[in-house]
Length: 484
Image (tube, rainbow, N blue to C red):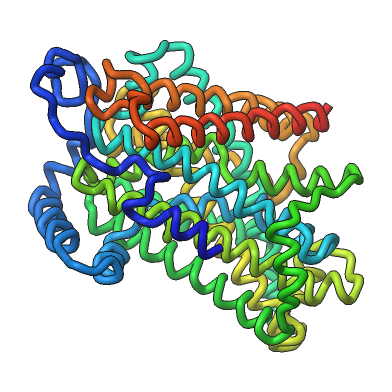
């Protein structure tokens, strides 16, 4: 873990953060500095409304970067983190919760390696996406449309939109179930319809506040996500401390790379790999950077944010959930069939009754934050596809499209719907990664900031990106075969 965090630190060679020296002879190359290239840049609403706070943040960032010691810089960066927390909240939804609980309950510590590897490769690609965004400040959908091909942009947008609608069903389903369980502990019988409507109302209020164009509202939203994630991590950490850690099994689980031979085991592994990074995250991440008004001067902060706000929370949360379930459910031989069964993981800490409440609140925070973010993604996608800005009735109506998923609180999804959606998304993941890989090496898009393959850093950078592409392609192929 320490070595991985080190590689994710600002200034690491694994990230493309060193500004290149200007070469006057290269100014003829069309690049990010030319506003006449027809690309849409930034979110004008954000920058017009919060120009003063943006400038104050840039000034604070320059002050941070002038500090002599890295821990002083990191302490300053911590105050400005945000976009990475949004990604963590999105990926820590019903899918990650279910697959991680099953991994610990069925295989103990053996699958601890899966989530760090999956997220590390995801962060590598997200570092490239962030690099491109901060250098050009061009909206990625528009870049796909004008720098690659319109069909690629349309396929990307359609797959993200479909994923955000379909994966909203399990958020409402699991969120309603755990809230109902909390009320059951208090001997209250609350109808599903009331719970689902409360989730819808709260989710809508949070989502629409994000679309007001205020960086303050965005920062508040990101801070709420941060504290919800930290609460969940702390809860499972207490369970692990109470039940003890088998350090030998932890080491084997992280570095022996055990792969189950059974079909059920392979499905769990693939589910964990698939839930780590989704195609909708590739769309959301660059737009969260734009919503914060970040530019070239935020590149080191971007790297820190990816490492500390995206990689570490995800790995810690999923790792601690796995270990807590291994120490309790796996040891006791409890078969997990619902939220009440999984709540036995907290029994050694606070007893089963309180454990059900604590567990349900942790899972609820995961589902609710994902629910809100799926709404945001629908708003981002449709605003790009139909060319309207992120405010007004069009934006609000587009975010509500995701809430077709409220039906998940009452009905099980037809079997064919997640199969078709998963297949489409799995196919689009390597395609999307390849598109960003091409843009990373495209001088007519990035100019002097494009990879030139003239140095070890450029070669290593491209090697890691190719590795990430191969990993998602292999995972997609195996998962699609298993689906059919």
